[in-house]
Image (cartoon, rainbow, N blue to C red; front, side, top):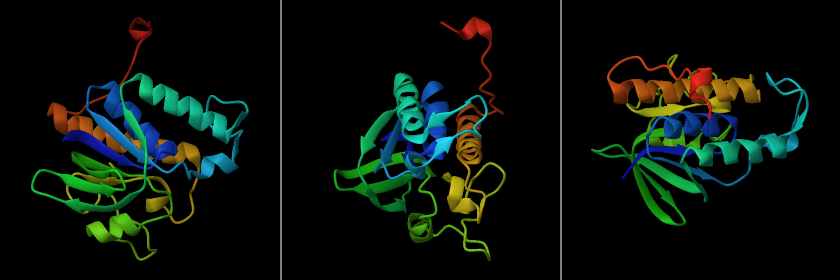
Length: 184
């Protein structure tokens, strides 16, 4: 059983995986490589003057893997809550985790099937930490927003979900704040 299962490998999912893996949680990301970022060119992402969306995804994947996340190209067809956390079904079989981060863009069927509450706008209802009405299940990015589908907003959502997971694991508010002394 892994600590964190992330479904989706766009800005939100990779951001969540970066924070959790970097801070010692066993993290698996399932992705079909269908992120909207492949259709984008980033001029409005803080710190990036101009970068092709596909190049951005490649760089992000490399960074996330360098911290130990396990990226798998497979579609998650179902998720369910269990006594120990969650089980996800893929064509590879089943995977279990204590925490679930859904980052599937505007595709909300997994959240609906899991029983997550939805808003009147038809998006997944989350709190400020991106936690859904299902304990230990998080939804991020376009899943939780009717229109604000920006990569940088999605990345922030993924980070918020990850920091909440890390806070729960550490038993106190956790801040992933690096200093120059941390650089190698």
